[in-house]
Amino acid sequence: MVWRNPYYDPALSHHTPQGFRNLTPSARAPGDFKRWRQQRRQQQLPRPPRAGYATFCRQWWQRADVSGEASACWWLGHACVLLRVGGLTVLTDPVLSMRASPLPFAGPKRRTPSALTVAQLPPIDAVLISHNHYDHLDRASVRALARRFPQAQFLVPLGLKRWMQRRGVDRVSELDWWQSASLGEAEFTCVPAQHWSARTPWDRNRSLWGGWVMRQREFRFYFAGDTAYAPPLAEIGRRLGPFDLAALPIGAYAPRWFMQSMHCDPAQAVQLHRELDCRRSLAIHWGAFELADEPLDEPPQLLEQALRAQGVAATAFRLLRIGERWLL
View 1 (tube, rainbow, N blue to C red):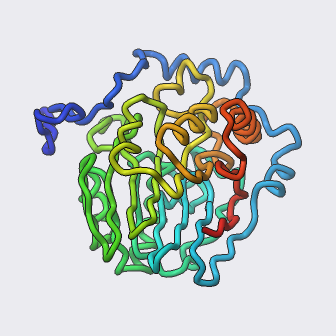
View 2 (view 1 turned 45 degrees about the vertical axis):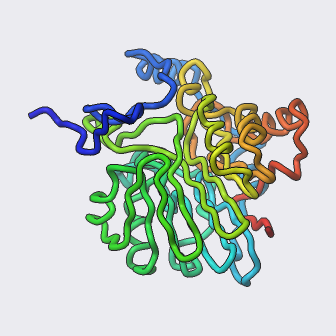
């Protein structure tokens, strides 16, 4: 039996009968993944941070302190951001387990611990999911959140509602790009990203991927999730910006011949910061898992170079330690 996309809308360019696609065609070719894995093994990549993993962890990790009521955000590691503003507490892509994998004994393992556990989180009002890759959608974390915060509203791209319900999530809204849902005074909009989806060898691009924009009164937050750079992303800023805070990915970019179709490098993240009219940005998607060929300590170095080259202040695009708070 041939699977047909139940969400297929021929009027929408990112829909196909077989699933979803990007606004900008991918440059990946058949055999590229195998070629990358072979080169990775031959070159023994990724290499450790120059000062070693223990020193890297001491430099870039701390236990998160989420006490108080002031408006703030915390980077909890990888793409997980905790945002508290206007009486609302939002969590993005909660992956708090030791591995980004379907298996507890294999797959990418954390090089830096999670900044806290689900039991240590404050009450969560909304959880934003960008897509279904294991480093962004973790079954154990979702189940624990659903048990501890049954009142939390989960917002997911098309194709993930049923998956959430099977993991005990009762309150879940499933949105297409540019669709919105309200929670109190806040409006959440699913927006395009340049990426892909899969959790098995048989479900590639059957669920959608995307970022999220939260608008609450005068505050606007953009969570890019996982994305490569693509010119059509500028439409997000034109429609929904400017942004008071953005969470932009800077890691898992090497080698460029393979990763450029799915992940920004630091220079492209700064370009997005500028093109989307972001007042402040937070660097995410680095420092926890070794998903590509660059060493863990390279993304912050290249980000600092890109900020200088593009004339953006370091205070406007910040590198936080995992677990660190940024008062808003």
